Length: 460
Ligand code: URP
Ligand code: ZN
Ligand code: ZN
Image 1 (cartoon, rainbow, N blue to C red):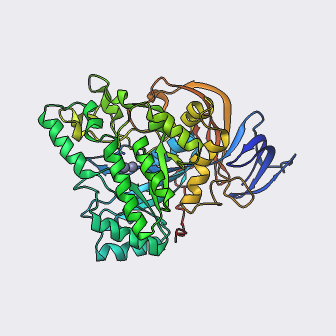
Image 2: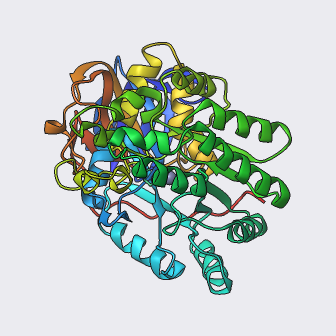
């Protein structure tokens, strides 16, 4: 298998130049001017296009038993959607229920992906309880190639851990060099506020954000930061949505706490008025933390631009509007949480971030690929364009113009939160380890070819 990408403008986190990229087998082997393809090689003309390193989504849910139902995608549908949208590596949250065994859960999540995924993948290992048995199993899971944990300070009674468990998880992570990713919301405040709202007869989707205002998330971040400071563990706040929470992370960073911050394409582009839409339409936009007041968007864009926020993810968690979201028709606390967006992250980030001048091309690559690879021990195999790296490449057409619609999407869900939105640019050709896996919005790859990415912890 050999592939030549000719005349593209290569853009990485820190460089930009026109050159040809020669890939042999699964890797990039040469970058130069005027490379001639030998007979039999596949040649892609990228003149007038950008060539980016394959994008990595650091926070997705593909297999997710949650709130009494299951998220809709499988690795067959999810990896296709990812590739069509320019994402070549997925980091999924492995989320055991509290009653479940960590190791068995890890094996279950692996079995959903191995032999099915068309793109490469790895997992953040969810720690939803911490006891002696769990600790032994977590050590084994790290030996099997997992270099990050996930904890929830939210979802009381489901995934949420208590403070003793949080402290012990962080101590173990520090010892093993594992980074701990965390959903930061004060679960007690959420539970109490939900009860109050329901008792007052406030049951519609627009109440969701009232149940978990910015202070709830800021307290969650502050809480995690205190524990991180005392244990010395490396941490990463997932789906940060608002200024109040970012302020807490920055303050902690300034006093030496090791913390990375992720925001989501949804928080950068949507706001809480979407969740207030009438006739239950708002349920399409219910996720946690909730969509915020629009004034937070400039804070998040500027945070990306200034390096205060490291990554942009999707927290892809697709639940159908017709059959699943109505579980919460009479009670917003029962609406399955999540806004699907795996397929559109890159095209939206480019259209509404780069094209509008909010972030430059290097920041775009950095937050959607390079920083993710660096934080999660995938670099320089992923996240860059250089000889020796996996030939995961995105030839991106800045002249493409199109409209997002659920009718044409590959994600296995019955709506798009971005229905009718304009796109100005899209992933045109996408390769995974040297094989073309998507072309002009159509999947052309191989299901089952995606590989589990073994990682070694580095956050000692
Ligand atoms: O609303 C969300 N975020 N759904 C997925 C589960 C989680 O908290 O990441
Ligand atoms: Zn979460
Ligand atoms: Zn999530």
